[in-house]
Length: 223
Image (cartoon, rainbow, N blue to C red):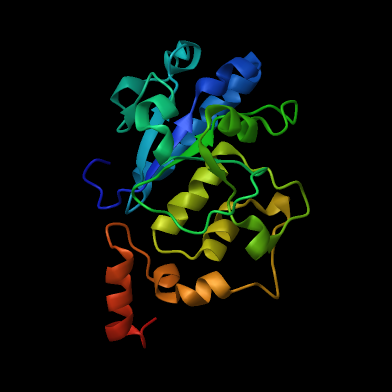
């Protein structure tokens, strides 16, 4: 992972473990393992962190080879480790929409499985910590028959798809399971995508916005 040309940072926040039952914690652990597996198999892995590891031995001790995972292990919380100014906590309850991923920010996914017992908890944690928050752009690209609450690994997979060259629309559709009933919107506000067409369709980790714009001048017919 350290050798990856992708420098976009994503942290899975395990500090929420105290809000879950034992069964929920184990489900969250399995979803966290899937995030790691997805990251290992992709061409451009994200810089993946596990934060808030203090007190999570109930799960980590049961995972064979956990201490050898190719990730960043962080016992402290994300705000303390990265600094509040860099953190963006992802929450479906946020009024802010995430439209781009940049290397100077760290995107936090709360490792929460609670079956709707703690609605809005990730948004509230962001507010309490005084850090920025945002929601994935699901509303812009898809209609969902169920509540717009995704699992830990599906949230992560959307980000992973995005940095591996997919548009937001493609990244979301590929990651969301069929049972969620996601349907592509017929009429989408494409203002963001049209303004950043090259960045959306030729996005590669390690390239700046300026570099992708230069690419458009020489390869516009291919895109």
